[in-house]
Length: 169
Image (cartoon, rainbow, N blue to C red; front, top):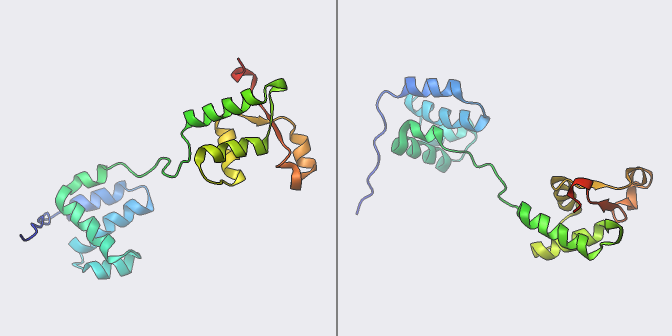
């Protein structure tokens, strides 16, 4: 059974020019140019791809989307968000609570213990920067910042964290 192709909208150049003025990112601008170059300059997808630095299939995809959805394709939500997140924020909070309760006296926890717990939860090794960002996200801070500045190289493995006063129960 042959595939039914959507018809290209007639006289859509004015609509596309108006949409081009509303673009805010490079990616949005490229999408509109994919359509404008077809409508105004009558270029083929391979030529448009060469001009814009895209793949031919990417140009065809944008053009097919416009043929099927029309102006509604520009109102689609962007990708955004955490696509490669290891743990959700509640899982991070729960993991930190477990680490704290395991080292309750003085509520001081070493960085390696936090990283080990994080890796156990995530199921694979993670770099130190991932754990540092998680601690920042959860509102933690280093207990002795002057120690870090004095001994930069080995301090990351010896830094201790404390739970902010408003998070202590």
